[in-house]
Image 1 (cartoon, rainbow, N blue to C red):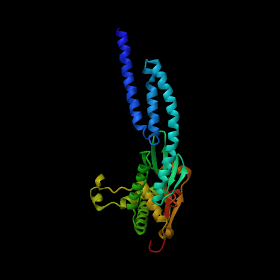
Image 2 (image 1 turned 180 degrees about the vertical axis):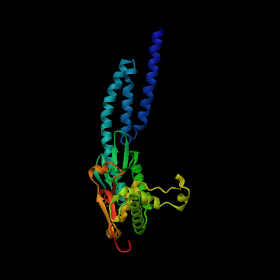
Image 3 (image 1 turned 120 degrees about the vertical axis):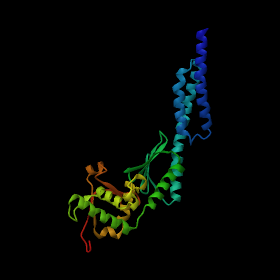
Image 4 (image 1 turned 135 degrees about the vertical axis):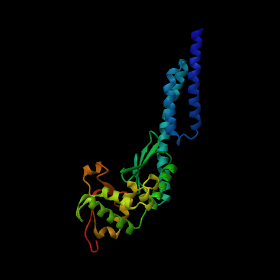
Length: 281
């Protein structure tokens, strides 16, 4: 008698677990394409619990159902991939931007989207996977679009005038020369010059009380974008020279900075910068 009760309790416990999983599966099955990857994970969980059932006939029926359901979900997944791409393209098209590339890597403007259909997420990068901006963005076209738009809008707010960028960078270069004992015109690591650039952009409040709350941040992406803005101006041709980084230099972020060449996300890693002497320098 005790053995029978034990088996029955075990059956009820395992059955209740699977019933709950099946109920959850049915709820999201109403929108199979949008939930294709979630449905797939649900099936994997249900399948994992099958050995706990002692009712052989029930196990057989569930196994057959799982086989058929997997086939259907494979179709839903393919539909989702197509739908996701179409929706994302339409959203960016309305914003005047075109998506390029193919899964799993898509390019849009200065950004790269790395799609992970297996785990249902997207990673956003600046440039061709140069600087990671955000990972684990939900695999929803509207969410991905808004994430890119929000970051891009924020990036635009950090713009300085070309004159401000040039003059601050020029001053930062001269400060770095003093620290390294170099002469004007010699090349200096661009990242080191930009470190001085960031310090020069701090407010008087920070200089008086250099704590985190008073610090004005300039992440690499913003510095890269400011350099791109300067590089497209007549100021750049005036007396600035950038030196293309070797492959080894690009491995260490202290030795190089990626700067866009155009709005399509093409760019170059630069390791050093120098200013040439001009009148009144």
